Amino acid sequence: MAMIAKKCSQYQVKIVDINATRIDAWNSDNLPVYEPGLKEVVESVRGKNLFFGTDIEASIKEADIIFVSVNTPTKTFGFGAGKASDLQYIEKTARSILTASDSSKIVVEKSTLPVRTAESMERILNNNGKGLHFDVVSNPEFLAEGSAIADLENPDRVLIGGHQTRDGLAAVEEIAKIYANWVPRERIITTNLWSSELSKLTANAFLAQRISSINSLSALCEKTGANIDEIANAIGKDTRIGSKFLKASIGFGGSCFKKDILNLVYLCEHYGLPEVATYWENVIKINEWQTTRSVKRVLRSLFNTITGKKIAVLGFAFKADTNDTRESPAHLVVRELLEERAIPVITDYRALPDAKRDLSDVLDKVQFAEEPYEAAKDSHAILLCTEWRQYAALDWQKIYDSMSKPALIFDGRNILNGEELKKIGFEFISIGKA
Ligand code: UDX
Image 1 (spheres, rainbow, N blue to C red):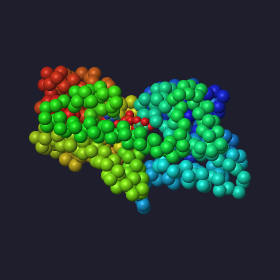
Image 2: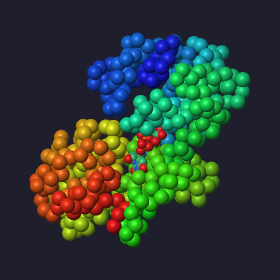
Image 3: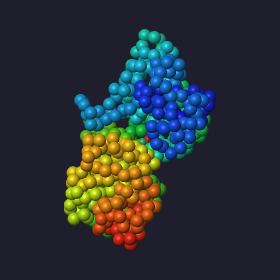
């Protein structure tokens, strides 16, 4: 929304939320989300045509277009628990839109939703005795955290789905007009409503499936002496496959991939396609197996006992350039270290507050360090879990000197120069290399 405000001064953008603390933070110097370049964009338009507030009813009433971006977590209860999306916030929002409205509006689904959610929103919205008409349009977000501003400035595509009726097509065009202020028309794709909803889930499933495929081969490389980076390079040179999302790692994380695949699995089960459901479920299984087998490898290198040993965990965010720790593989690594009664010492450039929150039940068993040097001091091993670029440029000699020997590094992101580190004296293991 900040990007829309920046690119389209003719629109007034109002962001409302029930959480006043969060809105206060958006109105302050200390934004609640770390994202490179975001602060600058927000500050350039806040108070001009971008506003943050809690007056939901009044804002609904005055809006012509409403983007619904409420959360759709995985259901934890009842039918579909653990897989299906919990749509209660979507439904509540539809009802509050209806209650507060006294004119017809376009309602845009921005949240990632299971296919055919628009149908239920429409049923709620258009069953009104007020003579109002609502057009529901799907406009899923493809930005990735850490590169959100660049992704929004220059998207590969903007997807807008609507009903193939006169009203539906007009609503789609109304939304396309917003993006056309800075996105070339040929990158604005319009489809029917259901294709648009299903594209978001399946685009994420395809990206995650590539990482699970390459990660499954990383284990074979470790056994055979093949090198996963060389394999990825060879595979990725085929332009039909392409070089992106082939970097072996301790596993993918984030709020989207696992949640969206589980939702896809649930949809396949619902439509009586158990084989398709099992196929995609295995993409997630391979991901968890990858993290767990990585910790086992570290354990083997430390004489199968890490009880009472300090282990430095470099990075807790699910990837670099974000403070987001949701579904982070580092979190699973820390839990496994605790199972072995090791003492994890966690450091991260942005995610320490989130790490402390995620580990609040075990705060007496873990330690936190602002600096990687402090985390590594007296540790037996370093586990690099997040691909922060800064880690490649640390003073590794200084770190080696401060550690217990033999000093082990496990590069869970394949970003370090193993040969150099071995020369210093480290024992070095990485993903997909014998
Ligand atoms: C993802 C999609 O990319 C985005 O289009 C969608 O809108 C939301 O979900 P995001 O979750 O922000 O975005 O992160 P992404 O950059 O896709 O990375 C996901 C995970 O995969 C991270 O843990 C990352 O470290 C890991 N990854 C990525 C790898 O392990 N190897 C790779 O080659 C690429």
